[in-house]
Length: 570
Image 1 (cartoon, rainbow, N blue to C red):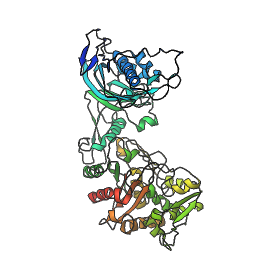
Image 2: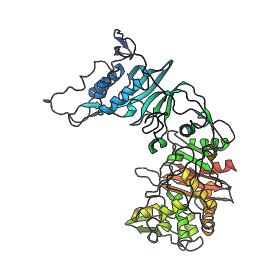
Image 3: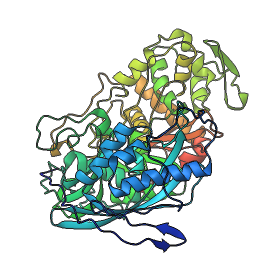
Image 4: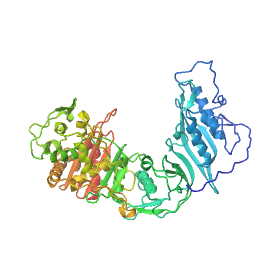
């Protein structure tokens, strides 16, 4: 973050109390902090005082305890008394470290905290201050919240310490630092050369953060001065960009550092992506209609990512989500059964109402059955028991190997240009093994993974998706250790084409054929009334997948999103 110096202390001042909004406010001097006594009535006694003779308090906190504890903590923090503020929490060591850094590393001064209406044991508060670094200053304002808890050993009410108390963007172990940014800004471009911004594409915020984190130093830009969240384990957290020895941890790589306030602009470098402006706009529009929806579109022949969007915008579920994919996983399972000679498109295949394995009784949606039907019919109607019935003929690691070797899943080695979760298909046994065959159990995916799965089924060979061309940084893309055989691929494509034409995906895919294929899915989630709805499909040299959390049947919820993307790309 560059060389830093501590901001000079200001002279101490004293002012008479003033009444503001019905609240007594006493400005107390000290290290440039403006300090307000909250709620009135004065602060509680010093954090360390207690009497052994008093019985240990238990039970719910009173309103007075919550208010007085919050007052003590906030007043001490604002006055610069870090030791006293830390002592008012249940983790004094962590609190002391972060609150000390608030002034000495983040260079935040003239802090004013204003408590808002208490909600149970939680006290929200507003923060105003100034970030002052060398000759640069800029006002800072944000909202935060603290929660008061009762310590079990002595009943003392204390602030429940988490880094988010100091700033809501902080996670435990993170810190705030102001200085020359370790990573210069980047100007991200779409495939046509247009700039990608959150003003145009609101859900790209996490993607743009990831691009800056990975390519800021490689793209030729110059860093500005910023107040940033430095993640635990990042280069800056472990010694700064000049240390030369620090290496980013996996956790930091999955959660990039974040700019909170820019004091001076840097000169951005340029990074070109594979995103299509038209398809990105369509994806944004489609997911915005749902509360929690995500979608990805890729080009099967190359792996280029053409669009990615999430509603909610707080987390990139499309790339980093870890959700049970439900029956869309049957694409992988079907390829395994065909290869093992346990299923064939036009051969009769059992689809009873129920199938038991490992002590669990599995059933189909609405307990339907297909008497004397083919595997194609079972796949198109998404018959669970047609897959569960084959569990006894498969080794515990068969599905895991198929997912890794053919579809490139679960090896944590994708290098698309920003952080991703690359799917997980763990080795399981008994009932969990059977559940994995239908995308439940321990199987976890996201729309990027499932778009890649249907793309691999279409081409026969796994092409790792990517957002940034490898020519930018000469990175190596992941590869599958083997491709689908010609016969397996032909049968798998036929299953998907029939599902798109006459199965559970037919309504969403209407008018998109004949070079198309699709699979629907619904994934049950504990303590969730409706299942997550999944849909993945291809049309020509386009493939897409989407999920609507708590949406219900995938064909009805995620299906229209994916179909709209495929139509827009046609």
